[in-house]
Length: 104
Picture 1 (tube, rainbow, N blue to C red):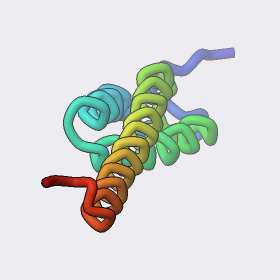
Picture 2 (cartoon, helix red, strand yellow; picture 1 turned 30 degrees about the vertical axis):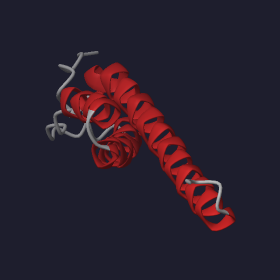
Picture 3 (cartoon, one colour; picture 1 turned 180 degrees about the horizontal axis):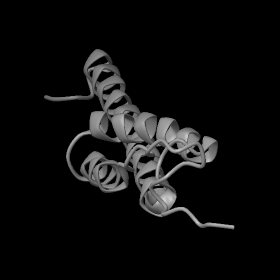
């Protein structure tokens, strides 16, 4: 019984290389800079993890891919909470201005 290198599929074709580093970087950028990077990381991670499970992609980057997915999810949650906070402040400001309590 011969063992194949991790980048070879049993039918002889080469596996796609993993994009774990890219997904992790996008997930971290999603938390730090822009929620859109987090969304992209989340979507890419789902696709890559599906391909890894099917044996079409190199599974060596599975840990980084999962970490990038988690960072992407966190960035989306933080972005939604930030949006809710901004909407709350706007509604509160409009309410105070309408009641006349906003100034002299």
